[in-house]
Image 1: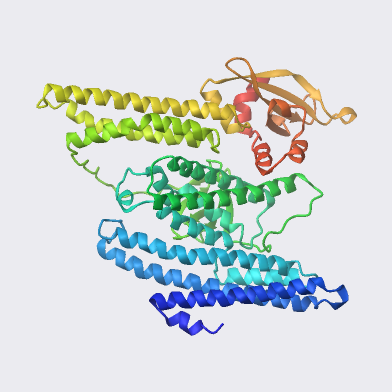
Image 2: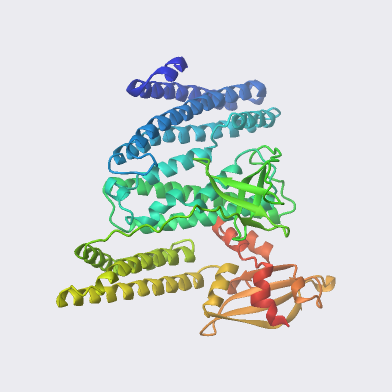
Length: 579
């Protein structure tokens, strides 16, 4: 490992060669340690190396890996500072323009090379740490020291490496032309600065750092993140169904694979924590060392999202605590929340300076008509693609949003074209064409909106129930909820668990789901339920814990967990029927 000086001073292609040479030597170090441990395990117990020796070997290899990760981070920071300065020469406000788009995309190609190495070696480091932790007598304490040291030095976790790679891949999903066109792949582009997605990734990453968050807090953060990841996956899958340049298509495929891997990782951990939370005999898991984080807090927002944020040290304008949620990559504040007296966390609206409405550029009529006809030609394909994807998409609401946004684009185009319908100077034949296209645009927008609603309803009815989904169907007049019989004693002689059922039927009077409310006594008020869950018809005779034990995979565990009915919805949809 004799390249430290060269790595700090070398530039250009020579620097890249030093990184490759360093990585090759590091690979040999790790392989030697792995081989040594494997040979030791093959020996008789009495002849095996001492635990301290094995631990020292693993610790040393892991520290070499950490050092290389640090060099990669430094290189990424240096590269970013240098290239951003060049980009700003063409656009001081950071906007991508024709003069700097090549440099912009090239920056992410270079970053991706380093991020790939970082993600690869973060995986290797985690594996070495797992082996170190498993060493009897000394491993657990040494593992704690190494993890704490990594975070003390502000190094990336494995997830943070993957997130930085994820967004570089996302930037490279667009060609130069698409990058400069506002409307091209708009929903996929919006993920780059999507506060919901960034907040979810940032909060998820905090769970991989030393903390003392409770089990239920971790579950809430992961469940919120899991929803955001599903939305991002749905948008990426939808984008795949349209023509993208072969080079960009490969980047989109890699972005989608990375997003799915992060989503599945969150689901796996969420499932394990849900099982642990319901099993009182299970030993608590310790994914990272437990360390108090007095300046960080998990909050639950009005939108039922759980986020990890930084507590502001002083905030004279607000009587309660204020928490800032920051972007993992840029560290910008993407959301600030104030705790009200009732304990609820509410987003703080930042006052924006008054702005004048930008003037819409007068687009020539022939150009508007061309765009309109092109958009109209895509409607059938858009609808067909949405229905196909609905069979495997994560969230019904997200599929509806995709079509609603497409409808909004058509409506916006119609509004711009409508200006010409009042132009008395138009020839009669041209005026007729404008009116006809305008009518088709309005009709297509209405159709996309209607199809979005239909897809959402169809998806909800074909999936396990959640409180939010039942709420939507009720607001749309798609279900009828009725109380079913009286309370039934489920606890025999103990008489401490009584069940009240509610049937949820569709408009054809077919039962879609059951809602189960549990009470400690037969005469307890309807509001005093001890638990409430939604059930599929085939789950009706099984309790919550039994369902979790019988779950076939992580997805089913999470679906069962999400079937819980909260107090607000319980009151509005169910308990009102008990009076």
